[in-house]
Length: 527
Image 1 (spheres, helix red, strand yellow):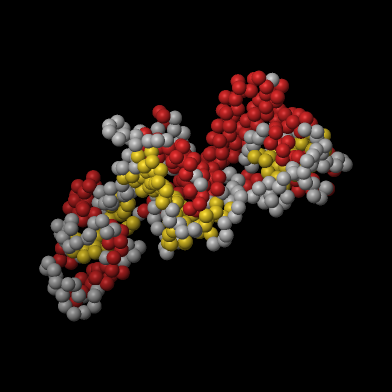
Image 2 (cartoon, one colour; image 1 turned 180 degrees about the vertical axis):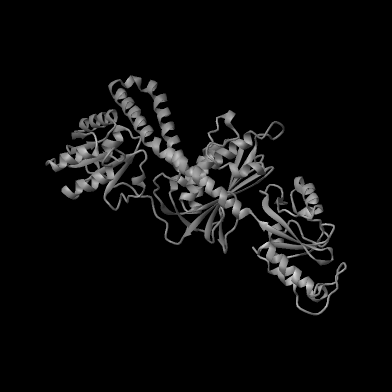
């Protein structure tokens, strides 16, 4: 924006050259004479919001930038008090500031419709002839957004490091638990009923780790091109079961066959999380007639953004978008909480067992898919708008694993590499019971030494995150000695796995935690 001292100098220059020559229209004590537009041209040319105000703190003229900043909800008519531009709680402060000549800039929250987040702005005053003053209004929302994004980025990196550091180890432990229970069930089938709660708990633990990785945008996606309307329609039965009889589900398809390239599983996760939030909000709306009853509406649409459009928590970049809109009739979210609800571990339902990861997970998935998420809320309504990049390609069917021939892969010599000894033993036992011969190595360096010494395995199964040589580097080194060696890489989380094209390199990825039977199936299906 224009420097304030420079603006004042321009204004004084105009005053010295004769106020009547500025071409102001005839209101108040001003006279209009033919000549250069002068002050009005300067006001209209300001990149920030600007207004002429009288000695009583009332608007006399406003520029286009200020009218755009305030929005259509508050018409800026002549005579409107400047204090009406700000939130009610700040109006007395503005009156005092105007009475004190406004020597220092004042940070304010502009008035916005109920349910929207207040816009921060900076007020400045510049004196003019004949008792008028120039009010300069600088929009601070962009600066605030950038600062908040930087802070959120730091939190995201911290949580991402935390997730990356613990996910691999936790999933190793969960794999051991699942594997040990499977083996115990094989020895004593009558104990399977007693073991089932522990297996369920391990599965829930794995799901929690996946949510952490989704929030941190570090999970491995399997995107394909899908029809958005068809994808949403396919979740209807699941969502109705989740919502129960007290919450009605309404689908409003309107994307007109538009396609998006997303991971369908992650898209389902987004809808499940939002539906769960809506169900809990509606159920906790309070006592009274109709309490706990509501409606969840899922609509699709298309949108074109010609310029960046502000929003919470994301600004919408220019582009062509397919829109997924999820609206509930819950009690709404207070405006002061809106910027925080996507923070990890922030929850308003801690007493009811809320983890604070549901919306953080949704935001992480949407951003990883290249989209933008925006929310608006007021009493009785909360709406999430998810913008996903439109894709012009044809929809793709889900890839199916080719059927394996009977006995294919049986009797294979497998080099098994894992630095987690209990998990390695369980995997080795499962493979040997399936008819494979197993050579074990405790890390990548030991495995490579065996291959360099002449070991010729028929397949290699390796963890990715290990001390020294990791699984990705081991796979590449092993294939230099044995081109075409079938490789299975396993991990609960590894940074390297996210940047590796498994399909291109002919590598099978097995996520942890896995059950021994899953490992056997993957190895038996190798070419």
